[in-house]
Image 1: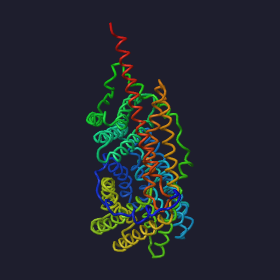
Image 2 (image 1 turned 135 degrees about the horizontal axis):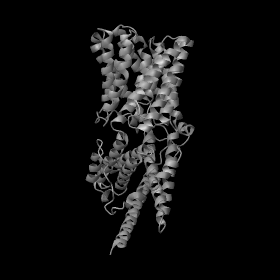
Image 3 (image 1 turned 45 degrees about the horizontal axis):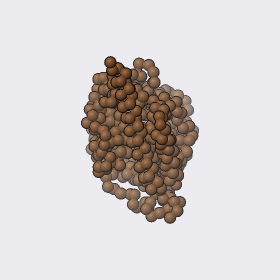
Image 4 (image 1 turned 90 degrees about the vertical axis):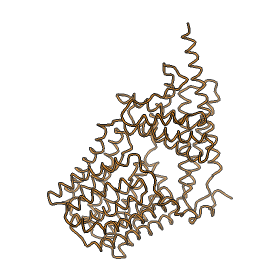
Length: 567
């Protein structure tokens, strides 16, 4: 069958399984960091407004405070830049919304603006890999601002409140650097070591070895991205180089699992917890002169490589952006047709659904509906207590902020159980509302947003996914050929071999991620599964060959140095 012919194997029904959608996972290793950060960032502005009896302005300060949720997995130098961009992006979205709200009260126009904003936010967050919580928080805030009565004269003051809270959130996000300045990069390296140890346990042939290997390469790639965002010189360079050697050891274990010691890898990972000295990863073949320095050759080439331009990264995301714009707009229009006073709830529900492919979007749809409905029940239970006073409103919101971030890494639906009552309570900052009406509108908007949003995802197919798999296979083949040519040489330059190995590692990790994403789409041309499997098999064999070549070179260097020092 032609590769361009849709097949029944990609039928929608086969991909919409409920198995495991609501299963709870182990919590994130750093679940408490965003949970505590958002409470610390939200509490002071809200308490100040409470003392001033201006809790109606809390929506604007919350816009800036919620930026504290981002970038907790990034080194602090990169985190500073990322948080600044998030704050600016949040302010930009709120500014557009406030201007639109001041110029028109036409709900259809406002929903359209909100849908376009949601699509832009989704595309930019995915293209820049901003990380969780992604575009959802930005869309939640900007969509709510669209339906807040506003005049042009009020906008500067409201934006100033958001900017001040955003600056405070930036300080909160950066504060842990005073206690553990190398925490993020140490944690990323430990995760790579543990993932490599898990693959080494399989010896490359055990049950689930392919999935474990893919997870290991993904963790190694994440660790390299973290380390390469650090300064190459200065006070932090020594720590970075020590961590790089550990990541190299994880790479070696992934390339040659049968020759690796998983317990040693785990011991190194445990030693990275806390603030102690980074463990040495010297190869047992090397002597005290530290011949492993050659392992880091090729890192400079990666530092010099420029990332793809933003417009090129946005191109493949066009189907996802179109899904977001169409789904959010239709969800908002449907909510308006039903007479709901807050169509942005349906819009945000739709925006939260869209993931890398249809299978993941379906899972998120189920999780969102289940979590929101459970959250509405929780709101009904606590509403009488929250209405005892505005101080109770603020305290409940802080508790739900913490709960949402503490639970969402277990499963998205569990976090939504706390997000929903928090969103409902925020609407009451300007004044108490009838709980029954709030609950009814939220339930209807959740169901409408989920149904219409998912149907929009079904309607907008991602036919480019197959093209990207072809491109990823080609890139992996080229990277393998480059490494193979160097291996064929009698004495390949160590720097060139290291750069080729790391390039092949990155290409294989990208191939697996691209193939997984494409496999979750429907109604597309048949994917080149055989080419993917062959590219992965040959690529990993070549990686193992580079490891053996490097080990042999280190052995020769060690023997030479030993002979030189003999009497």
